Structure formats: C-alpha cells, structure tokens
Image 1: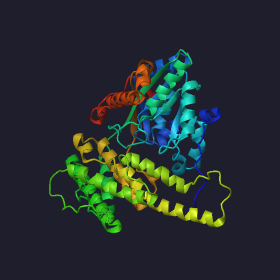
Image 2: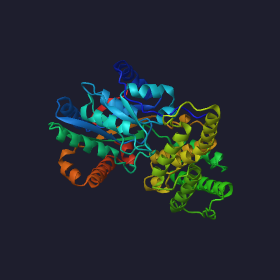
Image 3: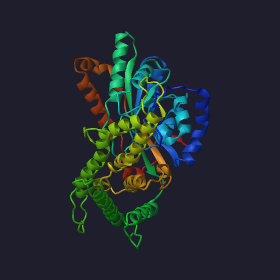
Image 4: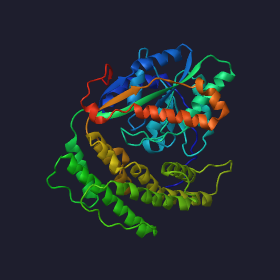
Length: 456
C-alpha cells in the first residue's frame, strides 16, 4: 500500500441535522444491524439528576462508560436520546476508527460531536479539545476509561488514567476561575445478554473454528456445556500450538514445544503459554520498528500502532514536496509495515482469551464472548473481513448507572500528589464499573428493569 497523508486531528463539528437524523434512525440500526431488541436501564434517576445539575449550571459532567463491544455507541445513544428532555454528549473516539470503519463513519463521528484521539502518543490537540469541551461545552462529555473494547461482558479491563486526569483538570480549572460548578464523574456499566438460547449457534461457530484449525468437530454435535467447554479448550490449545510452531519455524523464536494435553481440563496451561506466544508475536513487529518491548501487552500494542501509523501516514514535518524517489521509498516502507501489522492485530484479539472465564461461569454469554475472540484471532490470520463478525442471536443491552463521583472533594489530594490522586480515582472507578456487572446466568432469569427504554 502507498504511504497516505498524515493523520491529523479530527475536531468535533457537531451538526444538529445529522444528530436529528441519527436519532430517527437509531431504533432501526439497533434492531437490524446490532440485533439489540431492548435497552434496559437501572439507575436512570441518577442520570436524570446528573443531567439536571449540568443543565442548571451546578456541575460539569463526565460520563465514564464501560466499553465491551463496538456496538456500545448504540445503547449509549439510546440512553441519552430517550431522556426527557432529550440529552446528548460529546465524546472521545480512537483516531484509527475511520481507517477501518470507512469514510462514512469518519464523516459521521465529528458531526455527532466526536473528538478523535491517537491512543499511542501524547495527542495534545485532542486532550486540549476534550478539556475545553468538558469545562465549557454545551453538553456533557463521554469517554470509555478502558480505552478499547475487550470482548468480555463480565470483565472490566484495567482502566487508563486519562478519564481521571480530565476530571481533575476540570475541577482544578473551575477552582482557579472561582466558578461554582462541581465536577462529577458518572460511572455507567454496560453489558449484553441474549434474549433466547443460542447453544446451537455456539456449537455451529465452534465447529467452523475447529475445521479452520484442522480439527474434527464432535460428530454428535452435543450441546452439553461440559462437552462444549472441552472442545473450546482443545481449540484454544490447537491454535496456540499452530502459532507457536509458526513463530518457531518462520522467525526462529524460542518457544518451547509442549506435549499434547492429556484428557482433563487444564485451562492453566493456556494462561502459561499465551503470554509467551503474544510476547513473541509483538517482538516480530517491534524489532523492524526499532522499538523496545516496554509495558504490558496492551501498552505495547498501542505503541506499535502509533509507530506503524507514522510509517503508513508519515508526517511532513514542514518539509517541501518530496521527490518521486523519496515517495517511492516511503511507499515501500509503508508496504512492509502494513504486512507485519497483522501480528499485532492478532495479539489484540487473542490477548483476552482465558480458559478460566468460561469455567468460572459457563453461561452462553461467556461461551459466546470467548468464541468470538477466537473468531477474531482466526480472522486476522486468514485475512478475512473483521466487519463480518458472526451474530449469534438477538440481544438485550443492560445499562446500570452508579452514584456520581464528586471530584472536588479530591482536589486537595490532587494538588498534593497528582499522580497518586489520579491513580486513586482510577482505582475507585475500576471498582465501581466492575461492581455494575451482573453475572449473565442471573440476568437470564431476571425480569425487565423497572425503568426501560425500548429500542423501537
């Protein structure tokens, strides 16, 4: 691929006509594209009260929402747009989304008030704009403190400190300007359950993945969760084994060759082998980029992505137009970088796989979460279209809203120890968001919440 134009900051360009059209079209998108039949809200009175404080000039409001799926903007929009009066929020989104989601999404997000941010670097224009919107914007501001989806309905990824830092900046700016508004962070939990049994769809997807991995599916096609779990573990180990062999032979990496697993459930082996494999896969990308392996796997993926973007979309740095030979060399470098990026994308999908997640609570939702992550992994390897991710059944979105966190009360601690205060607020937000998750096995038999926003 040729090197593209530099990735520039995409500022918000809120357009009320686009907002009106999206409000009208959202119920159809939820039903047909996301296959979400309803959005149930618990704690809606907390959101209504927080919005009233914002509208009356008593607070600045930061909505900190869980981000398990790329479908999350739909339920979040439904949550706000179904308020009386209708609400809206401006928001942060990853600068890479328009690159893989297409020009239409790239056009739409700024016109809904979105502010792009590059996650792998200190994106000063994005941070400055987000800070201004949170301090003086006409709408509340929304951000996902996890920073990215993790594909798990019942696990919150380690939170990034950016949301807490934004909140403290706002509280500090308000205090310095002697403004009376409080700064509030409203934690919003989000997860999905299926509206009916999906075990046949789970077995069918599992069989497809087994065939692609060179395994013979169970001829009985049993839907017994214990048998399905055994097949799931065997599939994960088969994929691990094939990838380990690939990196040993193709890149001469030192990955131990383990004997096949004997009969019996041993998900701990996946937990031992997977980090070694993913570390090796990232090294294959980092070395040509001249990067050190610094940070955890998620941090390394972010840094690789940013370094790759700088080759795929090289900055001009004020240089005059490059000659054809210089452009040709930049194109060759971009091609080499693009060819290796699949290693990092594979890691992004595979890193969340765990044998314990299903074993702890063998619900159909947890089976589906893990199988879809394995599908994502195979998709990256096979070069298929990630946008064709299987839909295993119709779903219900559950939104839970916790009491707001008052930031002003923590301002003295922030001024005394900024890093410590940001870490403490991030930890409290992590605990709160994890506490908003209800096990999917319980949700399966749970009646509708008392305050319900239907997707119709």
